Image (cartoon, rainbow over all chains, first blue to last red; front, top):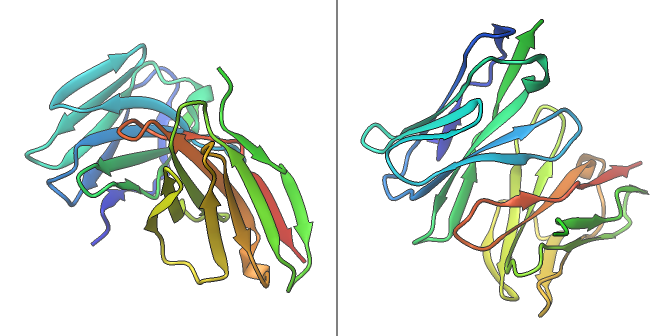
Length: 111
Length: 111
């Protein structure tokens, strides 16, 4: 079982719609959760961090964490073609100094 | 503030040669991690250094090695290069309990 699981996609949504990206993790000791965006040929860019249950909002992005169900999600409202990228979920276990990435979900936003 | 700096950006090497890649983390960041990314593959963890000590290591052969200096700058070395080592090598730094910030990467081509 992988530490972090993501659907590889591609997830296709029309421009202006809400894109919902999901991620599950295996270790209940995980403490910090992150979403990265990676454009083709570029390095990953940190876009959201979340540390406690509930929602964390930043502009059009909302990260949601449910530790009981061991899942993290990222909602992108009013999706734009420029949001088309691969989104990587990452999970940190600081007691053991571990940091794990999922394999990423490719998002296509169609004009 | 300055981001994570990786040098060189591009590199072409011949099979059997060795290569050294350099990474300068964000000032104050003591944790540096290295990842390999090939087309269609997720981020493959190589190793992580914290205060000059290798704290974690991924499942790569011993040809891959690294080190961290007292100023937190890090280098990774690959000896006896193989064609399969062609990849984007990413360095990332962290304050250690925050998300990682990535450099632009070094694209290595082995011919």
